[in-house]
Amino acid sequence: MLCSPGYLLSSALFLTLSSFLFFSFFFVIEKMVPSKPEEVVTVDVSQAKTLLLSDHQYLDVRTEEEFRRGHCVAPKILNVPYMLSTPQGRVKNPNFLDQVSSLLSPTDDILVGCQSGARSLNATSELVAAGYKKVRNIGGGYLAWVDQSFPINKEQQQSAN
Image (cartoon, rainbow, N blue to C red; front, top):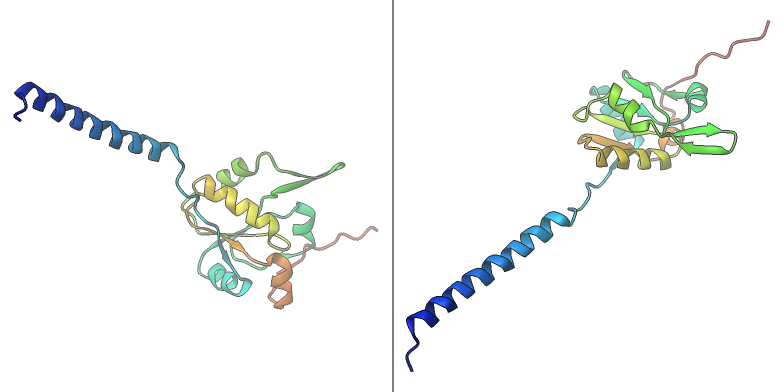
């Protein structure tokens, strides 16, 4: 049985259109589904100490009070709290990203630390999501730094006279 030329042409157009729609659908879906978020890289304090000596920026995300009580010795260190102390307890700093962005570039080599590693993990995740490409979390934070007897700075207490 022979098929008419019109039937063959309409079948070919149907297959072409079907293929086009099929692949277009998956292309659109792929663009709609977010790709796997970048994973946070965590380094231990020994690795962090080495990286700090090779021109990495240290971003301490503890409160200002914690920072004054003691912080890592680093050639480049900034304190931008991720959490703020309020009468109701600690709340996330709503200006964290803006404050960091005014001081650091998304292409800077940044190590993020806190007291124990929890806040810095959250802060690092937020920075990665905001486009910071070379940011790492310091596992164990300041407590692990002190446990290793690495050098610290403490701001001098003013005596009451």
